[in-house]
Image 1 (cartoon, one colour):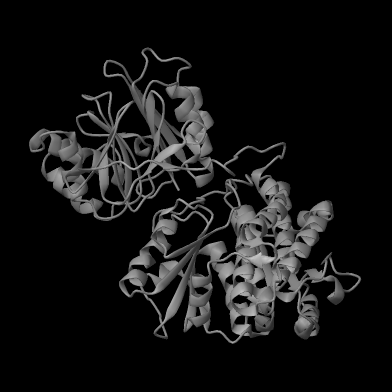
Image 2 (image 1 turned 180 degrees about the vertical axis):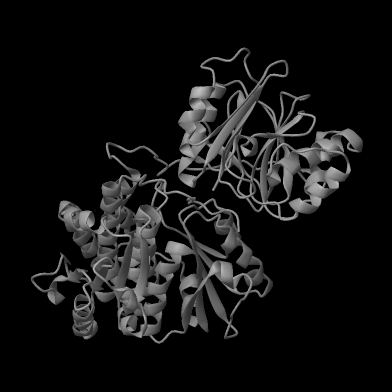
Length: 594
């Protein structure tokens, strides 16, 4: 959700800024822009739409060699998708230019304060008020830019990462950070700034992980970080660039590529968490899991669906467990016992709703385990224990391989803590099952082409298959814009069946013998009302006319094969409808604002 790229020093600014924005496209955006200057020359270009539109506007060579530059991809929160609301934004005197990720919660009050001081606005963003506030303090009471930034940020409520240029100081790039990711990269002859490591991965190996409340500036040779008016010693940390590939490698779309990377992701997990046929999880963590009075999962979207399957597994072993959507738990926390363990699951590790939950956990001294795909993320740094998903960068907005990695890691962790059966060999067999699905993916195309005819769709399941139905429906909604809803199959007669018609089909999952017969009885009720049912079943529970049959799996691994089918159906349905598979409308990959 939004992306920042910036630098100060000697470099090809056009190449770095535009390619940096392209590498951040996966985060989601609806407009973009850049600003470069050397003091005597400045260029501001902004565009609604994709980075390629911006590229066409930016000259191939600059009039002068810039000394500083910033760029941004915006996902609209305050103000519509218009040029006047694009970033970079500038102050009323055009001397302060900045880009901003995050949300300023008290922007209305600050805007009123600025308006009362005769300061005008050209757009409707909360970001513009930050530029104006800095410029206001710089022109009235601050002795320098650092003091103006500190004074301005002290008035802000909410989240922000800021990259700021002051035209009077064209050899410095200022910054400030709170509750939104921002990273400094150390280079040769230049220093860099970005909201993600990826734009800097090929040009920097040493980074500064900025903590909340920090501000400062970089030059081509120096990095200065301040907190509460005092300069801090800069700590450079080496970061691996492993698994940061964002190329298609011959695939037509990232979603298809990432679906088919799932087997290698699971194998990588096994390699990292199993050694000599023994799990390598921290024994202290396993003890905490065993002894916890309850296990509470916090997550959003796809990660929440993965946590539901973990809850099902824990309850089957007699362990008290529950899962909550983070945006609700943050304001309505529920803890039933005295010694809970919280497990936070986040693909990016920067999810704002989850970060909102952390103070409650820490204030009550509860144990916290974070599972993310980003070892350097805010949530990873705040956790008592951390487990990496090792999935590599996932570019497509709709998560596929990371969801599968969450299922696999949760299965291994709970196997190590409770089942103690060394079932990672079953996981290896599941990889073979997924490879068979990949090998026969063309068989899904006719089903997807039929689904593409409809505007509405049910996903049906019972027991563990209902969690898969939730994930399947979410994928279909995200990517195809079909109004897909998950329904517990036994609940059909209690209301949802009223929607069934020859224009309202269903996709049903069958993985469990004890409910297979009841599922098929429900299909007859649907068919009697003109509804179509596409059946996805495990081999031992299948019938000859089932639409898609996958290999048998242990019950708590069966969601992996069923959800891969749902992912393929979603992908091919979107292709049939001619949609943008990797970048669905209105969505962002990393949800860094509430």
